[in-house]
Length: 346
Image (cartoon, rainbow, N blue to C red; front, side, top):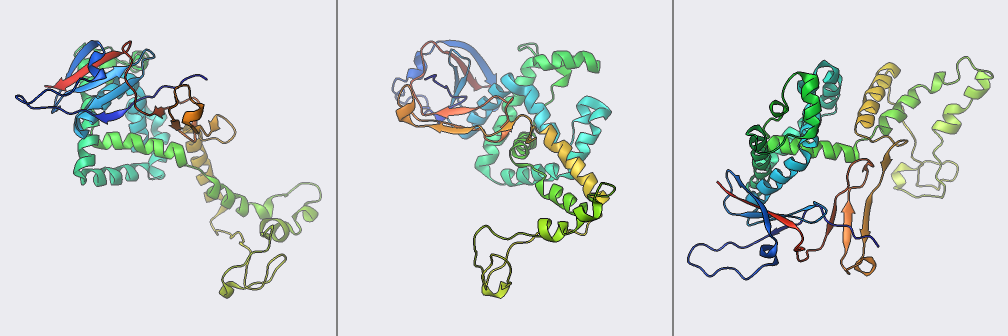
């Protein structure tokens, strides 16, 4: 079978102060170095190994340095995606794309994406270990931004096109990240994974019941019993039993049990229709449309079925199928045909 390689492997290496015995030989050191970068704030040295397919493996001595190295690598590969992801949940896309994106920002704030990001950011800042990691990711992203603006790295290709349309330069479109920006990107992924409009849609359908067949043939006959026999008929397929205090008799229901019935919301149909339209646009923007480009890509392969006997897992369920998948796999000795990048303290 075709072997799937990991996006990143997060592990730790030991670093000995001057005067102590050097660490035992590591296969990591056998990989020829191809580049060396300095990131402000690093307390040690991190190693990034890209296999022949260009997939990075990140090694660091502590969580803060791990975050810095990972942020630098992520920004080199996906800064454009990261920038849009943070702006989307913060309601700041219009800063980049202008008035055409204002409705998108309003809807993001309407669904509390901004509030959730602020809340999670505050929780992370109160946790020293998590704050060091996520703050480190932001510092790594900013090191990439500085390298691009200094002409040491090329800007993301997406900004080459956007710069001409927006009347600026690609370098000017890159802006620094904060810890809160990193968290904001996570919130967008969270919404991509879980946002749905079913409850709002069902409520809107319920409020339209009384006028559902207005003006069509056999309107009265079609409407007769619609509410009682279709919408509110929630008889279970099999007999069920619940707490005796909820006793209610009905078809297929024993004494001491009750079917679960839909309830009307009492919200004006116009309000529900507008809310449903708003939330449906958000689902479409998050590629969460059940009819187009939506699927589950969470899977696992046991060691018995893999080419080298190691288990593999991909955990990108319920994301749009156009988004590149991430997969992880148990640690192994890096291939000597890979290229290594050293990231060290300033």
